[in-house]
Length: 255
Image (tube, rainbow, N blue to C red):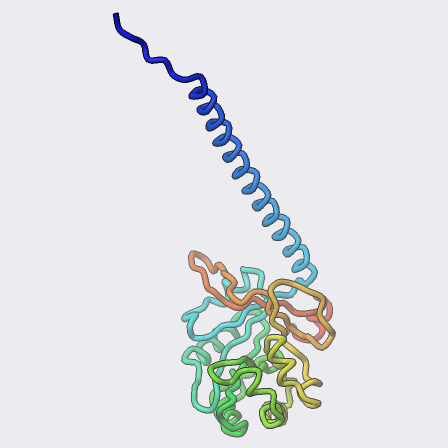
């Protein structure tokens, strides 16, 4: 007669406890995921509600974007575009002139921007910018993009000389084109570089999402890597809004 194997009574209890543990763990994971998804959806809704307060949107384009169909940019509910022209004293954007001419065929308001260099003189940068754009400056304020790079950090740039050179370049551009110049820079750069002269310029702020901004801020870059869908393609671009109402925009910039 075969002898039956008898499991200890605690073996079944252990299995039940283990199953309960796994079930509770699975429910906890589901609960955490639901909280995370709910939080993300709430944040997204809040962010969109904030952005909806600023109906005038636009993008910045450079040669990395290649050929851009500006009719499709319009269809993507954008009202303006800023085109990169030049950087420093020698670099120019390969796509600028072609993009500018094609953008004229749309109803988009057009702006141009120069990337400022701390290592070259204001006069040399003005010569480079002027030679590239000629009279192709659009109908928006001219933008000067300023940011830290390489050894040009906050410590090095917090000097009267750096602030003076930037002020000089802005003044030279305004003098040449009789057009407002806005300084496009993150808050940290602005605080480091602003002087009595620069502080009077209208700003192009850089922030993650919409926020309450001073009247000095004309534009706000709310997403530096926004995915703009143009037909079957997508472009990664800085997404910008005008810090004002549609009525103010129409009065100032609609061409």
